[in-house]
Image (tube, rainbow, N blue to C red; front, side):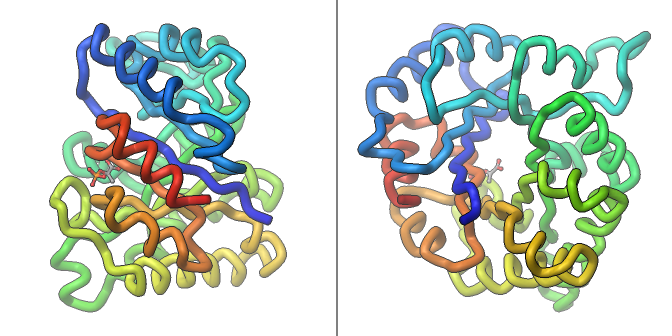
Length: 254
Ligand code: PEP
């Protein structure tokens, strides 16, 4: 039985007061009845991690996550945040390789492999993002690209380490555009990823890996997306900033 996760990616949104207000609304709405066995992760901006984590307290199923970490352990890297720093705050999750990091900060496969290693070495669960831009899908090369992204940044891991990773398939053309992949497109790619993992690590291991879908998930489409056999939850951007809608998305995962 794979772990089901609904993660919210707040990106660079909300001031501190708004972030605390959203957390408190979510705490009021998300309870055992709503979330069942689903884990909820709030990937908030770095400066809010401590406050949001404190507000969540010992909540059994809602945790915080960071949106990035450095590939370096420490040192003269002004503006960066190291995985050991996140570890020292007991942050359990970190997003690695979001398409915005790939696009605006030139993050590529080899660098992301180092970040994945850094996360795992510091007891953080990496949520490793992969996904194709529109022109790649139009050329029908999307499966090959996503296989390559998975290979480049994850295939150096031992089977034991791989099992500490969560993968998020996020087609770039669906992120923040309101254009969602159909449930069939999502399922097809999730199956491709799982088969690729099975080819390297064996089916039994591949079957344990949580694979999230991301790209304009909302309360209206979550049910259909989450009912696909290989979709184990979602990475949600825009809709995670609205407490009611995010709660409805979590309900759809049950
Ligand atoms: C994301 O940021 O990972 C994302 C999927 O955004 P949105 O849900 O807004 O498309």
